[in-house]
Image (cartoon, rainbow, N blue to C red; front, side, top):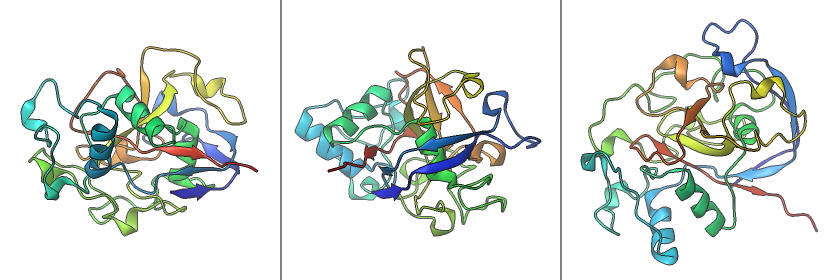
Length: 239
């Protein structure tokens, strides 16, 4: 895991961003306590350990079996280090709790992705290429997904990989399109309730405007598909 130091950062899209969505405004300064976040998206091999130890259901796409990468409780070596997909919010939350961690808040996720300065992408403001991230793809099976940590040029200022592209990532927050207008200035955790959860980070199928750090997506928390995974966070324990 990577330690993200405490302190403020600018959350949301800067005024005038040509691709800014309504739910990305207003830009506002947020203070976040220090925390740890997984350096990489969670892999199939690590999720398999959880499935076997906790007797948890396997990740499956309920609508399209051709998008499944598992054969029962087995995986091939070729998918072991690729991000797990076909998991819903409850699956992601259950794994993180089993591992002694938790899902990151939306604010924690964005700070880990952008650092403490305004930037459009984890690596800066240079337009994305296939040397920065896995994006703008069509589904061709397991090779649609890249092994985690494949893009050295795409890592965030804190050294966190794949915060853009590869797979969307569940965070802990409920979604509210106007949450930024009323968000606390310190350690926001999102609305108290809702019907949709937040996804961040974009996936293999997305194009340039969507892979910006600021992009927020609302999702039915029970959705399982071939473009959504997760990573975990953890509090810094004090003596």
